[in-house]
Image (cartoon, rainbow, N blue to C red; front, side, top):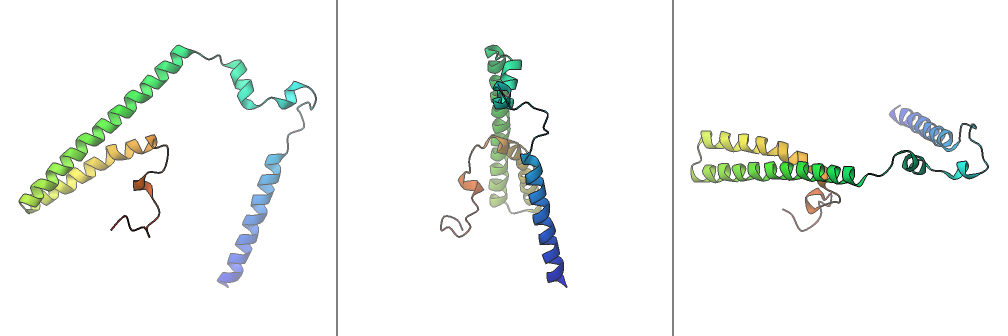
Length: 136
């Protein structure tokens, strides 16, 4: 019974995907096919409507850099606090120090998560190769 249901679901999914792809390829028929208008891309139209402003671009880049710097600074600060809490727990394995280390770990996760947006490629920490000899 499950195999039949799976087969029907697979067939429906494939048919839906094909229908979506075919409908996305067609135009609405309202655009003229001759002249330069047919060859204009969305980027061309936006570029012609929105003039480039170097000062605004520099402000945008500076703002993004400031936000990234603040996020990484917060991440480093909370990582140092986490390291100190773990060191304290290693020195005195009490319940209070364990709870402090747990709290420090939870606090450190938030700013670290905010830095993930600035990763522009896979880094070693993002690896999905769990068969590698690099890790434990």
